[in-house]
Image 1 (cartoon, protein in one colour):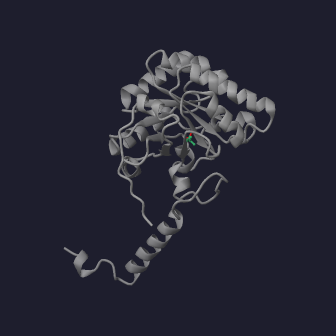
Image 2 (cartoon, rainbow, N blue to C red):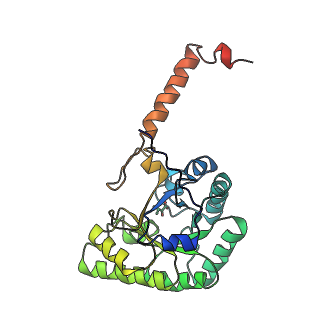
Image 3 (tube, rainbow, N blue to C red):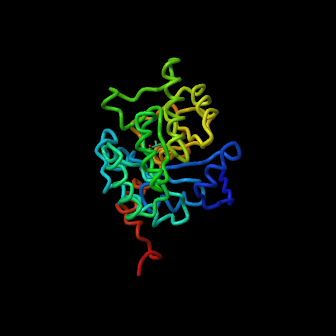
Length: 269
Ligand code: KIV
């Protein structure tokens, strides 16, 4: 069954903030112009996630992504989807202090059409977020399971399992909101705690692995379309069996080449 909904409206910060309690926001990652074009009129926001370092560059984690890489992919996405609200994920090491963060975020605005940047961190990074927002950079926060902390935390750990951690997450969300972020990604958090976070702040909370209690959802495109075969996290739903479909198609192509049924007379000059 195909469901095509044509109610696309170009998003901006004001509309995104107004969506809280009114409309669930749909966010998807994209790394290139081709897929960005396909998502442009469906997603409320397109995130050029540093997850591209894993699903696109084949690396074991996101930590080696560079700003140059993120700028290259963001330009591809903005070119393919000029109507989309595009967010560039600031890679590891590019916002280690307020000055570095601002220099790098300004570079993003100068060299791409990204509408906003995303940074990971809660109370510990609130001063950096505040420095960016007070210098006219639109910031999306990201708390909970933060992939850029994978090596320092010793793995990817679901958050909010203890009362102390739940309290810390709420403090993180409030600090990010107070610092001026327009929205907040909450990743890998127990859904009852994600609900408390969503209720505690006035900015939209976009969940990933945080249950259906948030103001919207974000998924990595290659996960949700079934292209990433090696592992399927519990929170991912496959909307397409992408890997299998591609393999079937490429095998069919090979077989057509081998038996000379491709190209046909109609496909000749
Ligand atoms: O890098 C990314 O794709 C992300 C999403 C998972 C939120 O940060």
